[in-house]
Image (cartoon, rainbow, N blue to C red; front, top):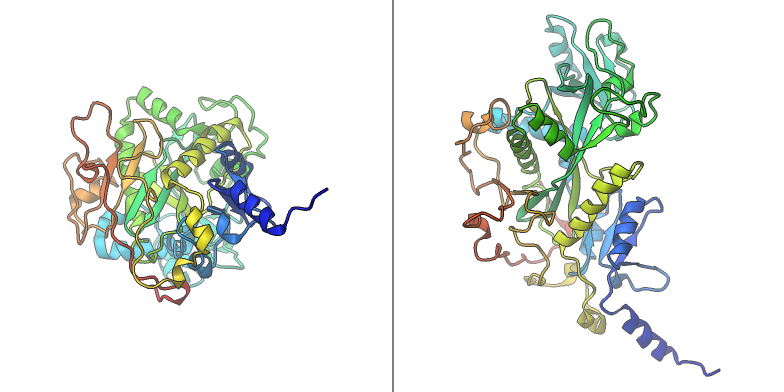
Amino acid sequence: MALVPSSERWEEEEESTEGKLYFKFSETRVPCVVRKVLEDAGWREWDPEKHPESLWSLHWKSGRFKLSDWDRCLPHQRINHCPKTSAITKKDNLHRNMKRLAGSYGAVYNFVPTTYVLPNEYVNFMREYAEQHEPQIWICKPSDSSRGRGIFLIRDMSELIYDQQYIIQRYIKDPLLIGGFKFDLRLYVLVPTFQPMRAYLYEEGLVRFATEKYTCDNNTDLTNVYSHLTNSSINKYSPSLNENKATIGPGCKWPLSRLVKYFEGMNLDAAAIMQRIKNIIVLTLLALWPKVPAQESGFELLGFDVMLDSQLDPWLIEVNASPALATDTSLDMQVKAPLLADTLKVLGMRPQPVEEKKRGRKPLSHSSGPVAPAPNRRPSLSRPLSNTSSSSKISAASTAPPRSSASSASTVRGTPSHTTKATPQRHPASVRSAPSPSSTSPPESTRGGGSARDPSPARVPLSRRVVA
């Protein structure tokens, strides 16, 4: 048997990988749906023992990356997090930033329940607690936890016990109920770039129900997590999970589209409710605009948790950096698989260029001077996250928070206004829906086939930057 020279074997392997997309997982417990969607789209898994580091195009990780990870990325490589986004994805940081923006822009940011960070704001909380005219319920959550872990409710200070940083938040005691059950919304938002900022709201989402009927009086058992918490990771263990519950049926989830049909059947204006939720998402993302440094490799797929009260006012509960992608039910697969497939389409992923392989191109952080944007790197602003005309899109290109005004506040809290427009401070923030086929002219930002990208600034390694 003739031996093939090593140089020829290397050339054969180069040819076999040419034009193919590779994904990289640096964690062993990656959700199955992520792998399935990638492999169904023709992707292959990157092997550190066989493939060069420059070969992969997507690095997916639930945890955070190091700043040096962004520095080392080549132009064709994307990673699923961005630096500094913990400004809204950690509960304590979200509270601080919303409080700061509310102080600057007023009632337009009045969509987060009253919150204190413990122990730092313990004195302020005690002052609020002492001024209560009647006992109030407060919900306590670890500031950097998920899936309902460590959450408890209190009425009396004697019940407040914590051994780490917590947030304590005024409980929304009059939530909108369906069939007597409490629920919240999990909405998925893709941010492919922060400089300029552009965000897409996925048309489908999840409605997450508690599995025991909600009550909130002096005799309510606050330890009953199946009545007070809507986390699916908790309610999937409920004894009543598979019972045919009033109105909501078995299980603890609906698709968002079913909720919209339910609202329409109740003669509620679902479109107005969703528009106010979009406003909340845009205003929350604006907190990141001055913080996330300019870089072209990172993107974020965020999970926004929103609750409606009995007056149909939306409240932002939290923002998740790595929303759960587990597929415990068939509904999870129906929602999350298309979500990930559309995410890949919007990102416009591409394989390593042949020219890069031949010349061994260095990472961008080692280059000097401006770097021209890669072709087909970003989708145009007119492209919705889903390929249906009914999908909604949120656009906030190079935005700064709007100045406070009574009219702009009314679109988030209270009756939505049809003629309101917030006065921009530096750049306009806009909330748009994807144009319907009957539209006679596209939105202004989409005329001419999409938005032009500004040339990238001179590259400075992210690990050396000082970001406010």
